[in-house]
Amino acid sequence: MQSAVHWALLGLVIERPSYGYELANRFEQAYDGMLQLSGFSYVYTALDTLQCRGMIEEISGTRSGRQPKPRYRATAEGIRSYQDRLITQMREDFRRSRLFARQLAVFAHEPEMALDVIERYGQACLEEAGDTPVLAPGGACADPVSGLAARLVSEERRLAMAARLPWIDYARREFKALVVGRSQPR
Amino acid sequence: MSMLELEHVSKSYGRLGEHVALRNVSLCIEAGEMVVVWGMRRSGRSTLLRIAGGIEQPDSGVARFDGHQLGDCPGEPLGDGIGYVRKGFSPSEGQLIIDHLVIGLIARGVPLSLAASRARAALERTEMLHCATLRPTELDCAEAVRAAIARALAFSPKLLLIDEPTIGVDLLARDGILLLLQSLAKEGMAILTSTGESTDLSGARALTLSEGELYGQVTRELGTVVPLRRRA
Image (cartoon, rainbow over all chains, first blue to last red; front, side):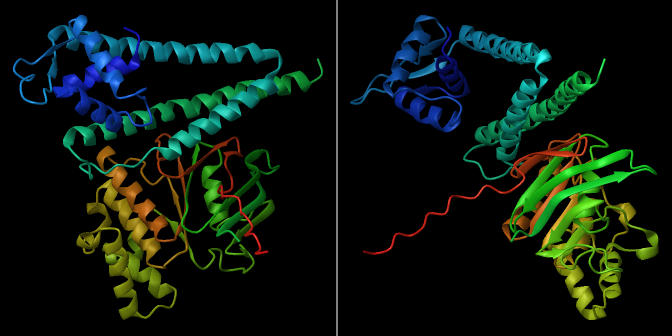
């Protein structure tokens, strides 16, 4: 299963059993600015897929009534798959970082071009860092889970920046040294 | 006119000026804005703050506060209205936290009764009034930073300068200090801080300083002014 939206929906079902429309609303609140639903109906398609794969199951007795709202909960298989997915996703992020560094090195003979990329990357990082909200512990949040999620996301962004900024500084020095080395007579 | 303007500021140290701290740095900070400069050690960030506070003079370039060039008045290095947050509390300046605030105000010619009330107000603003009668050695790291900010706030500055506000501060207390700085900015104060290992860039215009060079958005991004259309 490749869709990030499917995995995110599975996560929400793990967090709390829900029915389709409720899930769509929770998705918009939880992943605002990170993931986007193509439409509310997509949730039902995703729920079918997750159910076919044995990752979620319908809670019996929730389909009754004039307006049936079948609720879904995660299976043990679904929870295990979700945990595995988190780790795989993290490995993918590591790979992407290595790839970026490797691809930047193609400018070894044109260090000014690398410096241009580094400046733009640095600017993007600074904008991201500046946009990260400061959240007081136990600050105003709709519920404890949302508050915890907001703090975890915020701290992850800050720590990622704490790693990236020294790297940018390092890469800048490396390529500047190449510029200087090239301008000196042999 | 910006609250703080640095124009092509350069500064070097050493007998031959071999240690370059700042190279052609330009920076504008507006009232109500918080700017954080990230830099590694020896990147020049403390020099930047000292020059912004008028404590040091640049070798070349100009530093202006509220339209006035800093360092124009010899003997008064800190421009009136600039609060430079010193984190240390020297025993010679008083025993208790409140003493440290009051003594500074009296030294600037503020009458004792007014100095006491301003000191209490500054401690209240930083949520430190309950520590007014404690000794600096009795404070934890976060409280010491808040008390140091209060000492600067007692002078009602328009620009607050603070080097590494959360270094050594417990993670859970860190955000409280950042929120305090943000709230001061929301009240109209211009704030310039620096950070090193930590990542206190959240909620601010973030810049980086590397080998004395400043990177990032050195002036606040303002919306394009759309001229009003004249009525026909």
